Length: 94
Image (cartoon, rainbow, N blue to C red; front, side):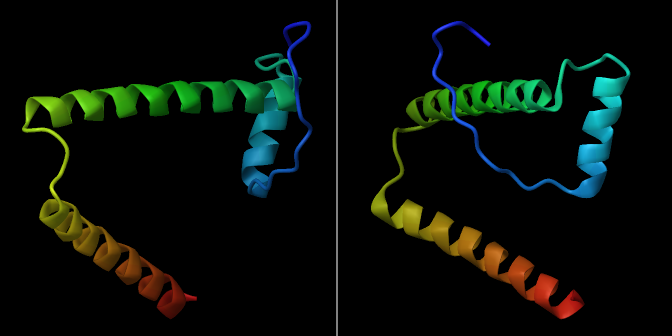
């Protein structure tokens, strides 16, 4: 950790298999600690998200600018329908 950098202790929930894999990496010396591994994973995820956001922003500019209201409603209707189908499938299987 960088000296002077503020940090917060939080609780997260991971699958048991994920925790076991992280602890195995720590035991093998491939990660300094469980916290260090998670901090690294979060740092990479945030960096990736920023990169995708920038890429998407550039693509939007190159293809006619932000979505119009009608286009956004159309996209939302497709995405909402998919989300509802996934939720329904999960409930049905469980």
